[in-house]
Length: 202
Image 1 (spheres, rainbow, N blue to C red):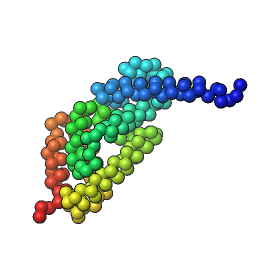
Image 2: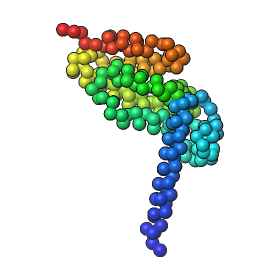
Image 3: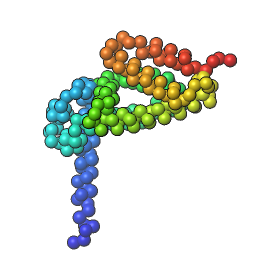
């Protein structure tokens, strides 16, 4: 029997594994959207998701890796939304994200937990996630700034990279304040940031 005849079984087994991992991930996203991360154990999450602890550890390795996978998958789904208008100014994009995040408070808490964990020693998955995400979002924001400057919507005398970093800082800071106190003036703060960045009227 040739080696080629043995190939279908592993491929089928791999496909089933991928499907099973996605099924677990879909359920985990629902759980985290409702409850946040709460720094609980992998075993407790497995119970809520409806799988064994061994299955969760097999597909995700650790609690940290599961948290990263959950947030990345939820973010990927958000990035696919047609409402993600690439012509938005950074503040317009931030305002849209803020409104969307109010519907999934648990995932916002999960993101904050991952960023805090990334600052601690011994958490490579969280650090890689946070570092890569900040770099990617900064690049996207800087591109939006340049586009808006060319369109005359953002003042031309500001550095796009610096504005990008400032907008991300505002986003994360406002999210944290909102998680702690729902009355924090997110909308007013965004309106002020928009006013500060706006190009002067002729």
